[in-house]
Image (cartoon, rainbow, N blue to C red; front, side):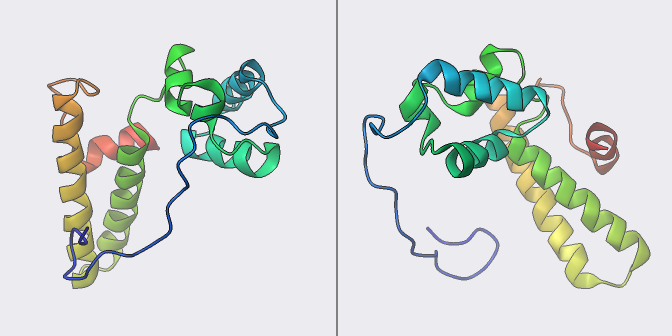
Amino acid sequence: MARMHARKKGKSSSHRPLVTENPEWVPYSAEEITDMVVSMAKDGASSARIGLVLRDQHAVPDVKLATGKTVTEIMAENGLSPVLPEDMANLMRKAINLSVHLKEHRMDVGNKRALQLVESRIRRLEKYYKRNGVLSPDWKYSIKTAELMLK
């Protein structure tokens, strides 16, 4: 697939092999993995961070294969899901950083363009999450509300 905001072709990369069941060498049961996910989520870790820790430190290659549910589904079942989806929160943090930089360096045209591109991605995600019922229909993005929500 082509890049969204550049005139370049997509990047070719390797794909995970198609595996339909949990490997036998995984040292934890589904309940133990669920407990680890819940404890890390209570400590404030994001779903991506939880997946990385489980993969790198606990030898769990795929939480969904081991438990039948994704990390975000496990977090939602236990009432630990974040207010905003993780991808949107990360883009909003990026927009905040770019706007802070732009306040100091007003003539930075490249930064201004980068901020426009990030905000367009946020608005696109906003439409998607409103359509799927993740965000309320009256939720609206602005840089000021983003600063209040994330800092």
